[in-house]
Length: 475
Image (cartoon, rainbow, N blue to C red; front, side, top):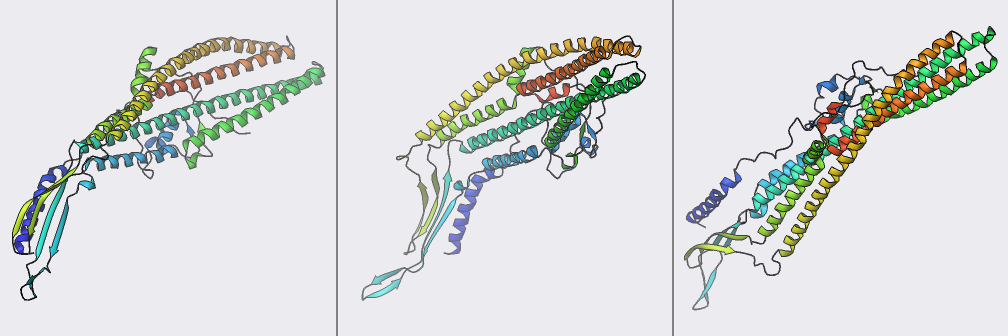
């Protein structure tokens, strides 16, 4: 091969690179748009990144209010931290789809035959010139398949994004449930301990009255039984509180807080914020619920896959220049083209498969919307009923507390007996338990509504108490 041959081959290579240069050097397209920061929390940074300020201000053993617990869950929950890494995989897959596939790289072939001989008269052999063949083939893809592959990868990226958002929402709602359960068990423990203190004071008072022959021994026996029973109930309440703490600490997923975190705040009735009216919540659920957004992204990817399968029916042919110099020194220049012939498989079955997948995803999306509407309307009924029930219970609790205080004064003045006092105190305890049960049921109903609506900002509607109740001490 002489210098002229190398020059011609180099010119062919530069021509192919000039045609592919704009596609290779194009600027990366922006990432798919996702939900705004106001409607969804941003993914946490790498696991070894610095914690957010709210987390940095929570030393081991500190009391955690609801907002701090939610922030810690979002930033440090192990399942979320691991799941967010799939977003990087989807982003890289999107970057790969924007580039030409490796199957479209040009191919060059070189055929050099330096030992060519020809017989001459007289049984002689004459060596001829070197035979050289250089071919440059560039596969050409039609049907905008690169753009379609990019659209499918972008849909997959969005689906991954919304799947992570769905997992974050589920983790936040679970933390909300567990935090409210821990507050509920803590308040139940406080009620049980107040009853223990009251029964102990009553037992001491009766002990003095029996010694002064002002009360019968039977009343003293009854007071002792009530004291032991209340202590047993307090021990059970403490066991339930410890179990609730364990569930909350496990949900946070922070080793430093696994044995010492305590919930702070008051068990209060959540205040609904956001759109006014039930139908507005239904519309918001249909448009913002992560499962629906992920299903929409899946349907969009399936629709694009149908277009890609149709485009794949167009054969990918190869075209390029050819240079040849035979053994006699004659030089040939020309073009070479090759194409597969779609006879045995024209790609129709793949198109039908993609169409079936698209119909499947569309039906799944439609049914998910119907299920969401049904779930939101059903949970709204439960939520409104829970609100009314809490208001009724709170309205009946205060008069019972007032009458109990009056009965204690009557007993101290010797105007009633211990049986009536114990009965009134038992009714007050039942009223306090009923109030806590109503508030706990309301918080769980509100968590069900959060799951149905799928809107994270609604979690911020939980009112922060003005005077947090300290955690009870262990006994």
